[in-house]
Length: 181
Image (cartoon, rainbow, N blue to C red; front, side, top):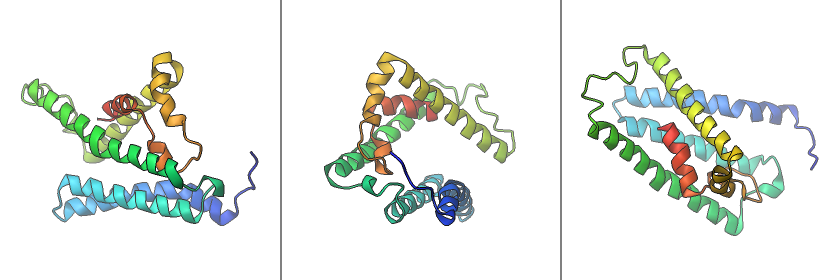
């Protein structure tokens, strides 16, 4: 399928959205924390705002107009997104927390995280470690028979859009998000 080249304003928008949302979200989270909000609120609000902006931009300036989300596939994609973000991810994060505290790792004197490092270095390490784990898990899913059988649901959409990226088998989500935790 051939696409017309993007106009300069659309090309700038396409390349600027991610860095602007990432830096803006980090700034918003920092300001929320400085304002006395919980870590949960400081993380949730920027994610919801960024997701809403991406969704609106996708409707206003879709890469391919035929891919605009609609109909039964949109409902299925939203169901996948909500079940992953509201069920699988929180259960994994709470499960990992219970496992770590249940094993006594936090009180055993074993230093698992470089908490003495400056905060920007800790954030950079956390992003690097989580992204590396997600990348390696994703690569394994594409290269192994078992991994592909779990991951193929993610590639089953006919229209690529914001919500379609959340389409995922439950075990695929477990593997990906375990690496992220």
